[in-house]
Image 1 (cartoon, helix red, strand yellow):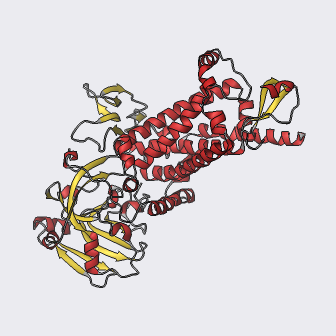
Image 2 (cartoon, each protein chain N blue to C red):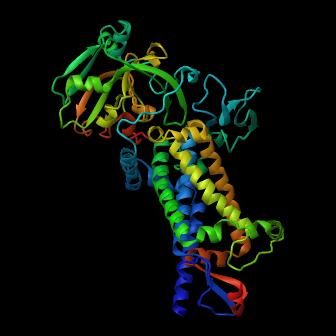
Image 3 (cartoon, one colour):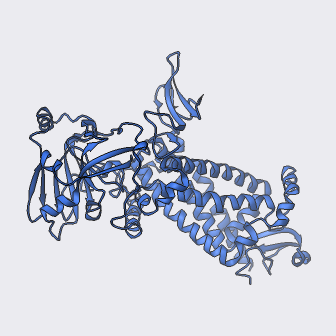
Length: 263
Length: 287
């Protein structure tokens, strides 16, 4: 019994010293542990996979996000990221008022197809008033009109080995030390086939503005804003995200953001 | 019996006439330290996330073209041209240069909500803040579920956390005792203690978890009623922030009380479970 007490006291001393060291060390003590692709950061990021699986288990595949009344639209859709692409091929499209635009659908599909803006506008559409949540923390309610992505996928006939939809974009982003890279994003086929996932060409009863992604952007309503690629050039069905960009499934993901942006 | 009772006297290591009791069960101790570690990281990574948009609102959305903001911490230019950090609460602005809105040094000012020493990482990095926050959120929630179920089954919740009618009646005396720094080391929680712990464990913890889930666009599809309960995503974000502030205040009082009540004995009981009371050995059963 006596020896047990001594051991406990030793333990107490060690625990006390360890606990008091945490606040003393300050926050920059953790900076090197969490930088870039450190093993600690990668381990912590594995919880993102748990969140993704928990959401897939908890949320029905076709469960809709709440939609709002028109009276809730109290401001224009706040743009973020690229708001005016200066890439030459985009400028050429813009000069022609997007008349020469064609959305290409390729990759793991039976029938590669492409659509002009008029063809997309003449397809059955969906209009929804939803809340846009930026990863930064703000929200904005807006009305979106577009073609359900599921219709496009059905026309192109997705092959069974496809697992993700990759969105290739016209705009290039230049952040930090690396060269400008084209924006791209990806979602799984559950969100791609979700009834509210649309390729939007209209916003608040007007043609989609350039700041918001004209001529075409995707709405993935159960995820955050950075998942909803703007200035979409083409759609590619793939079985792996490794070949694209930094291999993490999107522009922001390559910079450390979570691929599943549902939280 | 001894396993079920959180606060109970039993034969214990004893090297003088004071009584040592088994005060905290293993579930209480493990969840306490899980929360301590998880909340430390949740707080600092949460302030990092807040800094990405250091402004809070009421309602579903953030007013950019209308006013529904209740708090902001931004760098602004004053009438005389000087730039400073300003915290605006319900329309009233306060100069908080050096801490909120603008910090760093005069030569190298940092325009950010909370200063570098309060965020994880210390520099602006929303992506890493989110990685840290969601990792520890899982541990925080898991510890809460373990604690709630085990405390319900063991009776800890009813016996030690929820204030009894006698506790409520004794509250005025308990307040006077606290003000006079007169503490009763009988191993049991007094009325004020029970109220504080019940407030944190049964109000703030569930609230901070639920408002966190309300901010998830995915969870909004699964449980849209969360938005109705809290009055919209941005209100939920504001409540989440207020819960954080309440937990910081609780933490400061908690640490102060541990120091005031006898840090070694208190630390020993929350680590080993054993607590030395000021009752004589022969009186222990009558207490």
